[in-house]
Every structure is written in structure tokens, then in C-alpha cells.
Length: 299
Image (cartoon, rainbow, N blue to C red):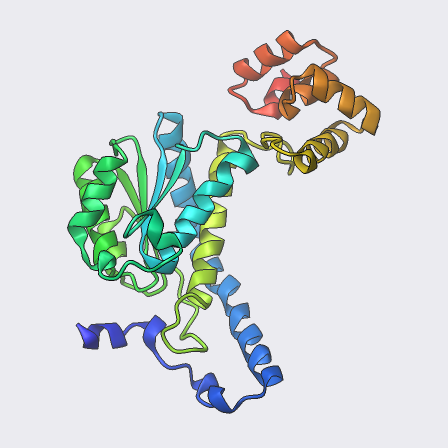
């Protein structure tokens, strides 16, 4: 087992940082910045697989399915982070994108030792999440070999779910199980084996793409604007007004007026302004266009 771990790219020693303990702060941050630049290039090499993953998520969501991330440690935390940002950013129900971490919610802030080594625990967690064949399950593991993630993906496949894997090593175990493998290899870490660094950054970039791309496919944006955001505080109310202004070229007062008329729904306000219609017609236009704003306006 130890030998297989040491053979992974994420566990290798970075030749550029062998004198890390002797470096000045300036030398250290320069090296780390140079290594971090490799992350975007490594993600670029996986764009085809990422696109395939996004299309699969959109398809299943339109059938009523969910996106479920499952992981341990840093990977699990990144999945939860991506999931919890979707409701305020895109106005989705909290159940649409779900993050599951080995050891439960407690493990988000404090490591639960041994949880990641239990395949059956993942099955239990997915059953408690009421996994169905319409859902998409994406396993997250920098090493690509975490037993908890392997167990979760195996169970999801048995159930008939579309499965994906995001790892940071080629020919990963989770990639071999999943329908779609995303393997972002950015090289050994500056601090050998500390996969919260480049590996964590690469996973975060991939998850950003997956969730944002899925919401794009569901019509959660107009042009490049967040038109489905939840305005849960004054800052977000002001952001909503700004979005209406940018989308329709109206002034602040007009944007404020239509935000009130639309019952604080940015999408509805934009349709009302662009189509010169009332609230009810705007709602009907959006329903007919499946919530896709540009179609609601054009039709």
C-alpha cells in the first residue's frame, strides 16, 4: 500500500523545493507562485472531460436529478464549499447540489480519523441522502485512491447513476470506476504530499467549472450576469439592482422600481423592462422559455 502511494505524482518530491527549509520568505513565495501557475495549464488539459461532465450534469438535472459530490479531507471540504455556494449565487434549492464528506459535517472543521478508509461508510451516507438513478455522483480524491470515494462510486454505479471522478493522478482508481474521469496533474507539491496546495487548487477550479457550467445550462444567467441570485441582505439587494441596470441600461431609480414590481426577482424585472410587460406576462414568458432569460425576451 505504501509503495503504491509513493508512486503517485501527488506524493513525489518536487525537485525545485528540496531546499525549502533554507529558503527566505521571498524565495518561498516566488517558488510557490511559479508552481501554482501550472494548475491552470493542468486543468486546460482536461477541458474535454470537464465539458462532458457538465453536459451530463445538465441532462440529469433536467430529469430531476441532483449533483452530489463525495470526498474526504480537503477534497470533501471543497465539494461542500462548491455546493453551499450554489443557492445564494444561482437561486437553487439547497438540495440540488450536495456535498458529502467522510465523517459527516463534523469533518468539515475537524478531521475524523479513519473515516476515509471505510468504503461502506460512503454507501451509508449516500443511502441517507436518498440517492436515485437520476442523480450524478462525482467522487473527489486528489490521490484517486481513497476507499471512501471508491465505495461511493461503486454504489452509485450499481444504482445506475452517472458518475464522475476528479483526481490529480493519471490512471486513478476512482477514474477507472467512474463514467467520466477528470485527472488534473499539476506535478509534485512544493511541500511533498500536501495535496491541499496545487491539487486542492486544481480541484477547486474544476468544481467551479462544473457547477457554473451546469447553472449556465439551466439558464441561471443572462449574458454574464447572475440573474438568479438570492437577495438575502442589503449588499445583495444592491447587487441585484446593479445587475438590472447592466442588463437593461436603465438608471438606479428605474432598477429599484422594477425590483419592487418583480417581487425582488431580478429575472422577472429584466423581462418586464425589456418586453415592456407586467409581472404576470413576465412570469409566463419565463415559464414558456424554461427559465432561460434571453429566450423569454426574444420570444
